[in-house]
Every structure is written in structure tokens, then in C-alpha cells.
Length: 119
Image 1 (cartoon, rainbow, N blue to C red):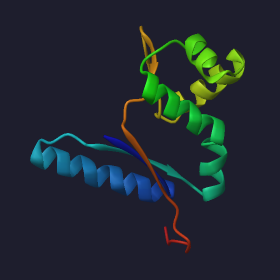
Image 2: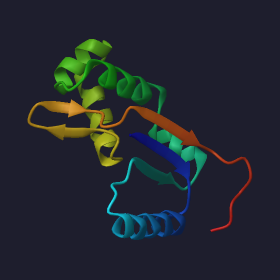
Image 3: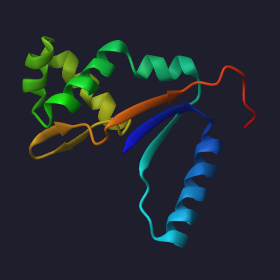
């Protein structure tokens, strides 16, 4: 499974979600990819900073762990890592359970069109 981050309006993401739901209902299949839309490239890259990207890579490589252990692995301050993980959870890029936090996908794709798209 991969996470696909893209520039898309709320209306575009809503249409895609409805289409995916219809296709899943018709085929009984499960969605393979997670799509997350951002209103602009600036918003996407402010949410997915270099440190957050490194955090995702490390967490995927090292597996499920506590935020404390992750902060030690990254060599970063616990409160900064905790803040990043909280935001990544809100974006659905990280999941938390009783064992700690984890990245639920193998790959991250970022799609940024160079021309403005119509809503």
C-alpha cells in the first residue's frame, strides 16, 4: 500500500472518495492506496517537512515503537517528535495502537501539478 499526497481541492477529493466507494461496493475489493489532498503545494510541503519525512522513513524502517524510542533513534527532542507524530496521525500518515506508532504504508508519492487545475 502507498500513500499518495496530491494537490486537490476539497471538491476534487470528495468526488474521488465517492467514486472509490462506488467502485469498492461494486467489486467488493479493498482500497489499496491512501489519497490525501492539499489545497496547495505550499500547504503540502509545510505539513511534510524534511524532519517529518525523515521521521516517516525511520519509523517505517524501524517498525512500531514508542514516541520516546523514536525520538532517541532520530536524535531529536521528545516534544518535537511528539508534535510531529501528532500532526502525522492527524494527516493519517501514522497510526497509533497499544504498541506504539507505525507507518501503515510502504511508499509515499507526491504529485504536484505545475499548471493550475480547475475545481
